Image 1 (spheres, one colour):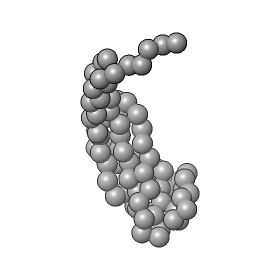
Image 2 (spheres, rainbow, N blue to C red):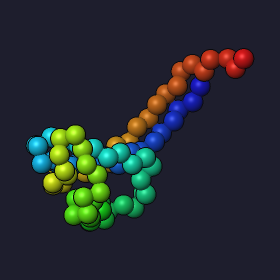
Image 3 (cartoon, rainbow, N blue to C red):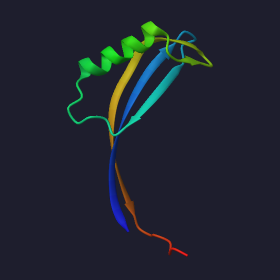
Image 4 (cartoon, rainbow, N blue to C red):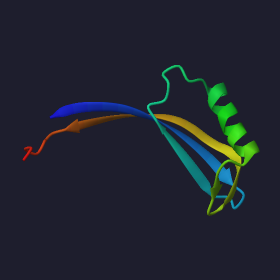
Length: 79
């Protein structure tokens, strides 16, 4: 049993077809700034690095750092 904490950075883009495309980055740097995240997203868009089923990445939609806490109540026995 253990309590596990983790963070994930969710970079959400808007595609040319008007859909969302999310890139998740586990354990982002603690001192990450909004400006740094925006610059990375703008670079991804400008260089057309990713292509999604709903078109090219066209704009920044959202940037979030999500904190998660998991309380693992049961660990199965190791066999």
